[in-house]
Image (cartoon, rainbow, N blue to C red; front, side, top):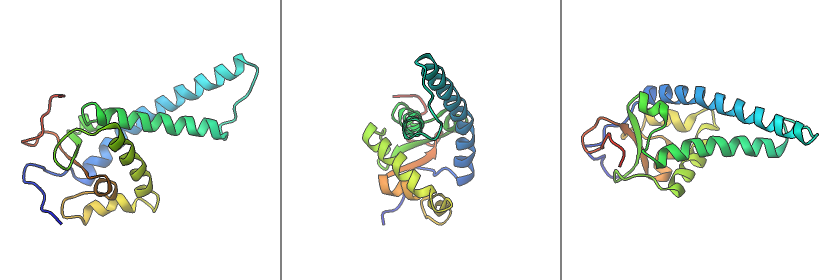
Length: 153
């Protein structure tokens, strides 16, 4: 394993969870708006869309994935991450591409499935990285750390 570069101060698990809780509030609002839009559109066409339908569930997953990936690609921070002054970067400190952001989102779903074990792993990891960070060669760092620009590039 390679040593962690000194310019990357890893974000603590507590900080990551706090940022996620902020983002969760935004996501609940977005999902409610999406649900309302689907119900109104379905009613306009005289149809009903049960919340358990595959299309509705895929729409919600796509909405959540787009939320995270768009923020990670454009600035490396969701709104919750910005409030808690953390950001996601590639191992070399660069910005994420859409492909890497999508891979990170998918890997994060796998990491949280076994009771969040992939996230708890960051407490044991020498670089403070969770499973999905390692699998996608990304890391969540303190945004005010030297070498990581605070302004969007």
